[in-house]
Length: 119
Image: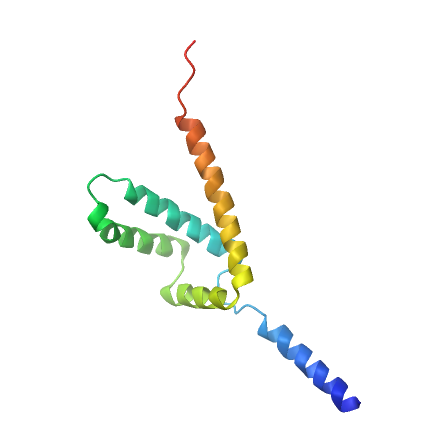
């Protein structure tokens, strides 16, 4: 019986440490903020006339600049993506936050660009 309780204690400790997020992985808030900025930058490049075939060529430098401004290295970004791909429930929470934020951005943009009523 004592061996069984030690086994359960050991398994509990392993499961607690296995779920801990590594230090070099972005938090959910950091990742969602980064993704919002990436999607907004993508949208800005996408609306430039005549760039449909070469959008990626113009977007990649913007993405690199964004990562540099936020102090995020390629290795941290890769580890972050790997972590969240292994933890889909957390990734879903990140994308829920991204969608909510982009929806608010869209609503503000539509309100600003809405035609003014004529008096």
